[in-house]
Image (cartoon, rainbow, N blue to C red):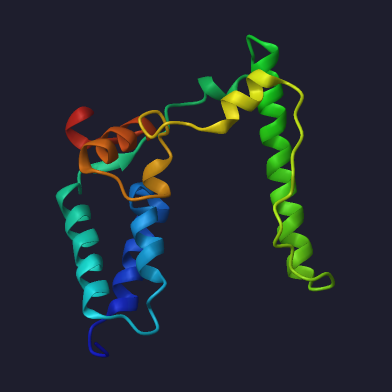
Length: 164
């Protein structure tokens, strides 16, 4: 395995992922963990990622313009507003938790940090997003090809033939 350019292949995939192909993020993060001592199975997975990129080489990420950026957020209900506020609070808590852990002054925080919300609708909305609706799933878990393709299309990844 020492003669196979595993780290070079991972770097090439990472370049593609950072520039235009976030759909390979999960697979790349799983394979990049084994750069120090990759096995045959890891190399096969990397080759499969490269085959996928070759098969979908005419696909790219499309940013839909700035119309969506004109307004921060408009909510139709108190539930949506509470959910957005809770989401912002969670982001801050995660950042603070990482920051405190990296300082090394306090022992690592391993216990979950509770977040309290008094809006039942927002709590229900935050409980679970089904895989059929969660377009971020290709970034976090392996999916069947049909679901993966549908979610990447929802993310804004399009084939060249769609725009010509």
